[in-house]
Image (cartoon, rainbow, N blue to C red; front, side, top):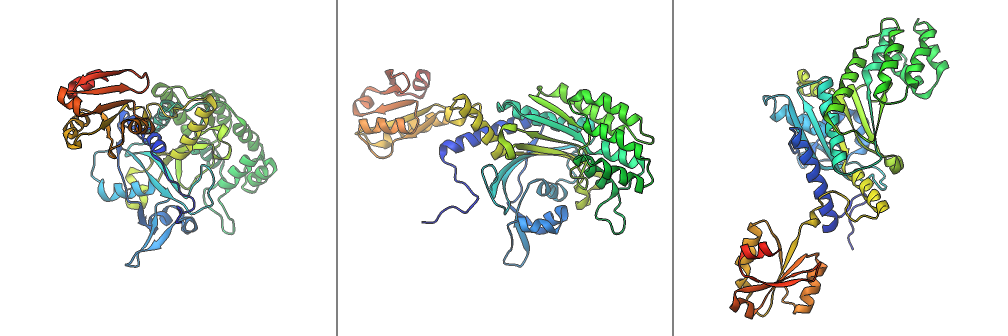
Length: 444
């Protein structure tokens, strides 16, 4: 028997209802903040991703050549394709652009629960406006989405790559890699701070002609923990260093204040003033959302301000700001949460909550009820027609099996009397109702 490929999944109707409900909830939140949905191809030119991430990314991709010998790949993420689309299709559109997207991505890697070779990503990008307020709009949307879906006990961590970078460059460390070295001095300093290697940091400062006493305030900055209240102590520490700009810290303060005004309060908010990831990509604010109970797969969302459009000849639109939401991971967290609380509902407003009428014609020509079924559907009712000519007992079992909330039984005598029998499968109540769309809807 042919089985599905390794690292992929099938979704049954019950599971798919949940996924559709979650997708619709996310899109509703995005539209309320002015974001509009776009879509890009599932496969793209290989060069699109090597230009962004380098040749080393190829081993993680599902790359191939088409019949014309062109190198292509299944997309491993959605940000670069959206940037390519903006450069190709939306150069002259009114800015800023607020774009949302959802789709499948593919990475060739060992899979485990929460990490698949085919996975789904939801994300947004704000293009053509930058600065603290634009960043706050993006963070606020992420918080609003997680709040709306009912996720609990998560933490959002917000930082700014410019704070530590400005502090180190202000002291005299270079962002350029010296001949014979593997990384710039600034990157080395950040690594020493991240690992708590005070001796390595002091030696680096000394070798670059910087007084080693500057290591202590840098360490103090790195050790700060807490929420928005850490900005004040950080300002004092940075002010003690000569030549250090406070612009990035001021920007982060504005972002945090704006998020507090725009979004619900998250369960936990932490400020990371010495974040050092993605220095060749991120330019300003960075943030991530973690669900601690999920362990190693607990990061469910991440993003920030970055430069990418310069690769497509649009440097004036950099930096952009956005985030990617791990659709599968958030659902896993919601499912674990629902199980722990003994709930069957996972996402608010799941599609399977929609009432369903099971139409059961018996001993009549089915064509006689088709107009009624069509009209009910046109009025927004969910109607499933019994197609196998079952006897009443088996037909009622079928209705229960498909999750119907109401049965509508129509036999020869019902047609003569211009009525049908409606039965509420939850209460057992049944009643004769006129064979009209208005009467049936009123009786539901």
